[in-house]
Image 1 (cartoon, rainbow over the protein chains, first blue to last red):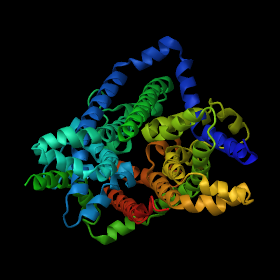
Image 2 (cartoon, rainbow over the protein chains, first blue to last red; image 1 turned 45 degrees about the horizontal axis):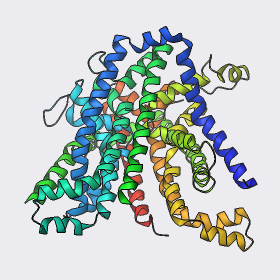
Image 3 (spheres, rainbow over the protein chains, first blue to last red; image 1 turned 90 degrees about the vertical axis):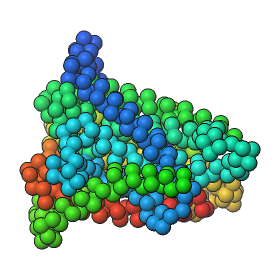
Image 4 (cartoon, one colour; image 1 turned 60 degrees about the horizontal axis):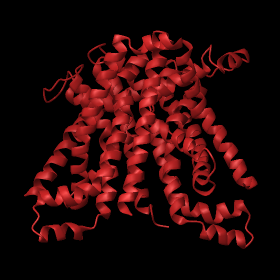
Length: 260
Length: 263
């Protein structure tokens, strides 16, 4: 290793430790401080369990909707032509660029108490799903788009000339190629949904056992000084995040094998 | 026919989830005219909040950019043991709840934290002050430059770099004259993403900042503070300013995107 790369390694490791690794280590250490029973008690408190269940179910629903809507949107953006397509394509990234707290207010403006169209879902579980759909919009679209772009149209034409129906062509030819991309996008959307805070905190009303998701539960525990409760729930979310990242890594390797 | 159905489904979904809600925000902000909205975003508190957001971004973004380029060089050009762990830690903020990020910093720098007691003994305030807000913002926006630069570095290969070194260029010269020009668009795109993420950060800073109006309140915290105080025009007006910033980011992304892959 040359002096240049030695220095680079030093800087990178120090910065990453200071910004990411040390805080996470402090979190894991805190969760072990209350001992096995204390940790387990915090973890299985009825409110924490209800929040986690709701978080996982809502995120799963959002991931599924994204799998379908994201694929359709990607297909329309690549294969269809219509005026204003460029603008639509650019808008897909808006939920990424827009602060999540603004996203929450945005959903509340149309689907809240003063809704101009008369739909009020504020403080319900539907509102959580809507807010999560907003913030997770870009993921599947942006992972499927490049794959669809590079997909050889001749394969589809061959399938059609051999008498395959549109649906057969899609399910047998197009879909298997898109699947790794869809799954990576869905996994990212799921992880984002599980950890989401800003967009749901206003619209949910944070009613324990009803509309309180895990991140909001953790926030509440920090505010009320229950550090061990917050730490236990945080470690669960941390483990889920690591798990999803491992899955995405596996999907990526699968995708590269698929292309080779 | 089928094409038209799919187009309708896609555009209808986007209208319901994205465009509809967003246009109502603009409408609500200017419901009582332009004057009240303008007054709401030019109060001393609002101006301080926007200024604080910009100050935090002005520190976190350059730090993450330098880190991102060095980290990408390391991952692609100088594999070392522990690369897998490094990769995982860099990606983690993409998948981790910002509240957990804020809480982790809270534990590290709090009164009883590993660093907290030493720092407070030396009169250095990290938690509930600017330093912790910068640390939180740097944490959540760390992945973007790395993720944009790594694939480009892989693609350009090492032929030109080796040629430069053979011709007697120092490592710094090689980087400045050969490597950097090839990755600069990827760096620029990564910087735009990092900036967007920094300006919008809410969950992590709301844990570590203490949310003192006029002191540790960023633009996003200001929006939620106005909303919680039933100042709807104020909340929506500040949201519109943030939305306009997001649109500028979006336009920049679109200007830079076609240059990806052109080297």
